[in-house]
Length: 314
Ligand code: PBG
Image (cartoon, rainbow, N blue to C red; front, top):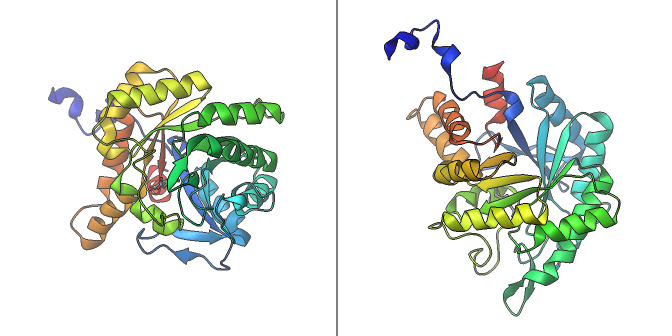
């Protein structure tokens, strides 16, 4: 076995490879700030003011990163998340700015209500419950408003049943039949999202998300979730989080032929960054983690490590 492990040839026989083209960079756009603002629970990650969003994209382009997923921190919130579909909402404005300066950028928008509702849940609340069907037209409207602003791909993350179909129908009716849907198909009710909720101010005021996000014990159920999304018209499927769910990524890869994205989430990022900052781990660990996600079968990875890794890959 050691013949092919010699230093000058081992690179030729890699079964999985990582390139900047595999990486999708999350961007937090905050309508309420004028300067970049560090996110305390996510070392070296920032919220970006609207005015600086083009500059942020430019920095990524220089590193070979050309696809982005946008999250918004709006200037107002209400019970039904109206600022999510406001034509002058933070995401709509950010997409227009990015696409007018960087038409080649791939702009993916997260379609969810939790950043835009006062209660912080991903759907409309009725009698203390998250009302599934009442939420669907609102996320349909949100996706259309993103497409109208120029979004290349919409990515529903709220885990409402029927969300992919509702968005597909809304997009088609509005003339956006060529806008693809990347669905957060198998999204678990995970502890690893807590730094994100800090970053996006999307923490919930009561209860938790276990009524709509998946039970962490289940793998077969993830295949059912993906199957439903495929039937409803998803173009790209997703497993989230990534590292604690490599088995799910592998299963999905074997079972489905659609492009598969894995979301290397905020908690996965923060724990490895914390260990590196302490000097307990080398930063090579980041590369190893991302390679493991590709080796498991993901085509694309959404990751907060994209900039540091792209720099090394160049
Ligand atoms: C919104 C959303 C969340 C994440 C992506 N979209 C938070 C949540 O579901 O609570 C988490 C991303 C991360 O932790 O990096 N629904």
